[in-house]
Image (tube, rainbow, N blue to C red):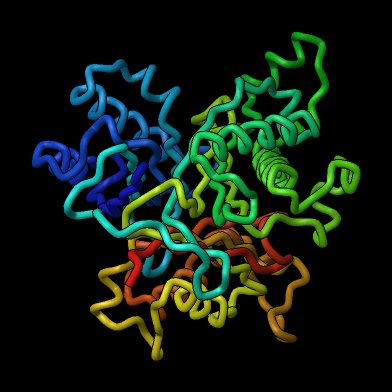
Length: 380
């Protein structure tokens, strides 16, 4: 197997023309598209319909080029969109593809063992999985955790990743509780952990994070329960990036790692970020892939960067390295919009590229008040 990646800009949330041009030109085979992760300029909240708009546009376009129905494609291809391109962030989407026969543009030597840190050996491996639809009564509960964990394990098998240690990034999109879903559950005699859509998004992200941690062995099943959700922040997954939205009714999972079963020139690495100022984590993850930042990535190395994924969270203790911040107290601008803009500026300043997937809502995803960064790059 061989993975290849295309990071593409969009003029508006329904613009998939860049990918269609690559398909028409033969640079990308429509049947190779396995998953998409992107940033749209919505608000990132419950009513951010830019995510569904992009997904619909993408699936309709791929249907024209594959002969498959939009519904069939939507059940097979995870399309994870994060709303909010604050600050220097640029709307874009990363297309993750895989095929069995190589191409001149992506061809590389045999997979290597080991790496700069011993954790980025092999070549980029990509796996996907979809869970069964979740009832509103299960969202943000242990049943949700178990559903995500099972899907992550299936995605690892799909990627032919043998060891959880070789997984570097797991992107999950979870459903949330809407008014309609809540009423349906109530009519069925079910109880819900919350009727608040925004809180349900947070609980869904937590369930996703614990599910990833459970599947990768970062957490033990007996070590947490629902009482740990949004409380025990010492429990987290250092490789989970979880979003939630109204546009899905199941858990969509994308697993990225390195495997000797895959060819090509791409690798992926990750680092936890201890806080919003952890520029060292950004520099270190690039160094893991043989890319130096002095202080910014050189143009010749910038061309090697295929994708950058970041998860971040405003420190709920209200301080960053001893000094007070006001993100949590701003009633005009949501805290997640503050943190996305701030961390995006930090990472873009190092990489010299604004096409970065920066997602807020990092509850139990990386250290408390921090998050994680994962990078896909061509081998030197």
